[in-house]
Length: 113
Length: 114
Image (cartoon, rainbow over all chains, first blue to last red; front, top):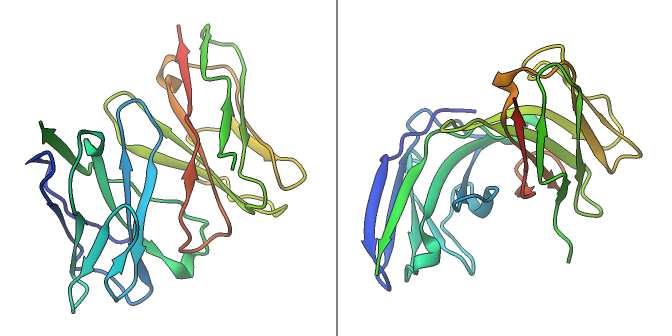
């Protein structure tokens, strides 16, 4: 999977929107953009994924740049429960799943009450 | 519905002993993955099963590690002659299929080798 770059940490206030950036300048045409998060002492949790168009689900929104070299995970109204490490991962559909997910260091999101 | 389950949740073993870790994927999911997360480290992919097909074992850290999946469902990760560096949280995930589909992770098994 291609490499992604994320800030090590970000801080936000409760009930405010949070924008988590991810750069993936070497993304290929068959790479999906996946976001997972890991709460303390838990396994990772799927958040959202997309290919080219922006995506929305009950947890978050994913905004993908037109050239696909960057993306932003948007939490519309952060709560204390959203404090976690957020991972941006590229998933090559051509791999068929055999290569697993490649987790980087992610962004440690801190939510202030 | 039921998610991915793993057992045991915690395992303490002496160096040199063998351990077996179990994963029950979500019913109907054909793809199953094992990962491990060492203290302060990122998640490391170990092995992938697609249905009943033979897995690619090249991601396993050493020949002391093996995994099997019976009947395309339950999977067991076995570590022989455990070493202290094997201490980690071992995570299992399943997906409806391989490829771009989201993976659902279990709670993990925390292995401590003394």
